[in-house]
Image 1 (cartoon, rainbow, N blue to C red):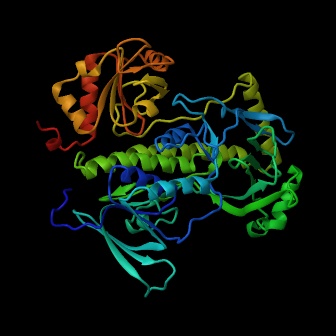
Image 2: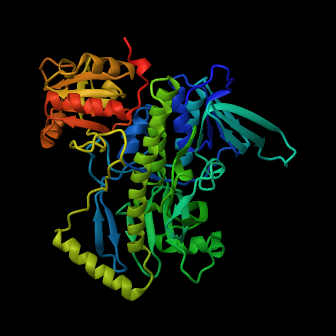
Image 3: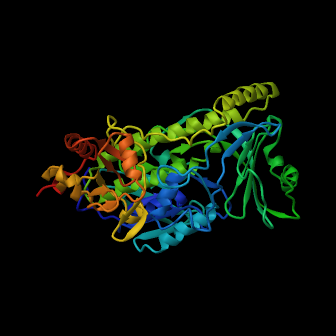
Length: 532
């Protein structure tokens, strides 16, 4: 597709849905000067908790916005494992939510979603190229070779109320499970037929509320229950709605307080911030793009919350879309690169959906005999492992802009503490992000062809030589992380993408040149951008 010079656009990208996914995408585009219109059907921000946890990858993404999950008082971590217990309070599983991850952040953090969204709104407000349309919803969508026409109406009016039309180069639907954009594009969902109703109770204790462990799962067939933090000063309980129960009745405050009694939580010492029943589902869209339109977040995938990856998956979508859209709008990549957004992100999300569903099958057992057999099997497995915790689950991207025949490619890159220009911190905070070709004790620029260097420069990339402290290099490997990691995968070079994933690795100069060419082909770079 090519943009017609005769087409008049109101915005570069119209994003329908201004939740955390839509706002993050808007920020990442707006920071590069792209004209963005955020369309949100609700006039006011929703001030109740929803997601309460995120992983190390999201901490890494937030860090590029200046949000430090380790030191910021809006976030917390608990230096302990995640225990699954039976009805007798005995461990049947232990999950590692304690370690520092290879990406340089803890594997698990806790937060209050309205506070994070307010941070995003503040950042949106600092970017003059972003326009927010609150209280408007999409009602019509059509596209052609040059752009997308989006029809909007004011949410709180009848069919004869105020209307407006936006002409955008691209449209992204981050507008939730009942996505207007997805439905308008005729994109079908793959539904795994997984439905469980759970009551979510968010509580603000009047004072300090101590629980040890702070995060655990009660696998009691009489009432499967999740007990976790809800961010600083908050707690969350999640109760499975049993087959013979009325969800609406169970959610009434008087019944919610009864469920909280065994935990010494009452109206006298706490505030019930939210009591709501959610239906946990498992589904994903067949494709995440069609023409100049894309979908992200809950519009593209729904997963049970047992792995704490629902919002995480949506924020990954936003970052994956941002570097593609920024380059497409700059004329660096052709629109063909967007196909890799679907292929990479769909398979990644499917992995976590399936993983979450398997966890749910373990947790959501209400038959006593089946639960007893589960407990016996899992305790035996735990004993055989000498009570070693299960590592946090990680997965590859689906096929896309990475070379599947090189070690670590398609995985989130390792991140260590480095020193450059008098600053010592994590690599992202010292060097930044973007396209990097990185060599250990060697300058990749010395091994790349003139054409490759020109192409790397055209996509805004850089070469970096990492070396030991005190050696002649661009960046010092202060804590030895990179030397250890690259040694473990027998690599001397790696290519890092703007979303922190490894595009390729190589053990020698010849392999590096071949892999760089492979990556460039997958990016669908407009050849005019690399002409001398």
